[in-house]
Length: 437
Image (cartoon, rainbow, N blue to C red):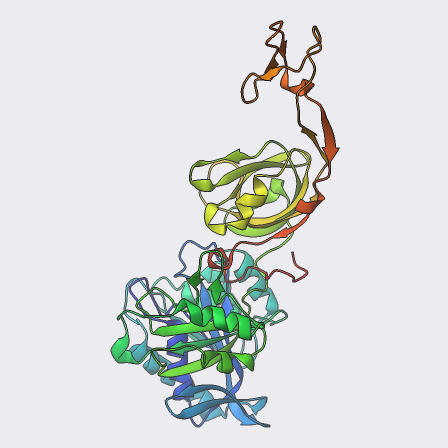
C-alpha cells in the first residue's frame, strides 16, 4: 500500500495517517518496516519534505520484531508474509478509504490525497523518475491500469497518486531509518518545548544517529515547527539505536512512535549531468572549472561562475549552509570542482543552487608579501592603498602591486568535500563520509 499527500499547508501529517491504518489493519499484519520515501525535492507542488509512505500488508510469518508502540501496545512487523485472501483484497480499498475520510484531509482543497494498493512492488524505474524528475499523473495512471489487481484513488489534482505509486517502486538500495514520535491529540497545535541539549546528547551517545543537532547554529533538529502531530523525529543508520536514543528526549512524552525505513541521506535525487543539458527543476552532479573570481553577495552568499566545455553557469553558495560560502570564497579561476545541487525552476539563464561541493584540484597560488625596491633609488616604497600598489616617498615613483615579491603556495588544504551544516541540509542529501557524490 502506498499513501501520499493527506496533509496540506494548513496541517495534517501523512505519516500519522499511516500509523492509524497500521493500528487498525487487524487481522492483517505489517511485513517489514513501514517506509518513508522522499521524492524530488524541487517539485513546486510539494508540502514540506515531499515524502510518501508505503507498507507491506499480509499474514505474517517468522519471528516478529517491535517497530513501534501505540500507548501500551507494541507494533510488530514480520520478516515474511502470506498474501491477502481474495475477500480481504476486495475489502481493503474500502477500509483504507474509510480511514482516510476520518483521519486525512480528504476534502481539503489544498490537499491531494491518494492511495495505491498493488499485489506486488511497482517497476523501479518509476521511483528513479519520481526522485529525479517531475512525473505526470497520466503516466502513473497508465502504469497502474496495466497491473492486474491494482486499485487506487486520488482526490484533488491527482498529484498525490505519483508519490503513492513511487513509494511502492523504491528499491531501497541505500537506506537509513527514522523514529517518529507523535503527540497526544489534545496537544496538537500547542507549543513544543524541546531542549537542544537532548539532541546534542543523542548525537554524542549514539554516533549512528545524524541530523539531530546542529553544532554550528546550536539548533535542535528533532522537532518540527508546524502544528502537525509529530513530537520529534530521530534519524539514524542503526534502527536498534533509535528507541534507546528516544529515551534521552525529556519533557513531553509521545502518544505513539514508529520506526520507518527511509531513503533519507541516500543522494538518490542526484544524477551525473552536464551544464549544457541540465533540465530546470532537477538536481545533479557536475565536474567543472572555476571560470572567474568568486563574488561576495549581500547577506553572506557567494556566487561562483564555473565552466564545463563551452557551457557556463553561475553557482550560488547560500549563507545558511555555513560551510559552502566559506569554501566558495577561496576558490580561484582554474580550480577543478565537483558540484551537486539544483537548477531552480523559473530562473533566467543557467544557475545552480549548491547542496555541496568537492574541490578536486586547487591550483597553486602566487602569494605576494612585502614591498619591492624602488627601481630608481633602491629604497623600499610605501603602500599606496589597497590594490593600488606602492609609491616611493623619496623620488615619487609609483610601482604596480604585481611588482611585490612573493612565492607559490599550495592550496591543497581546500581539496575534499564540503557539506552544508545539518540545519541547512535536504532530507535526501548524502551524508559526509559516504562515497557519493
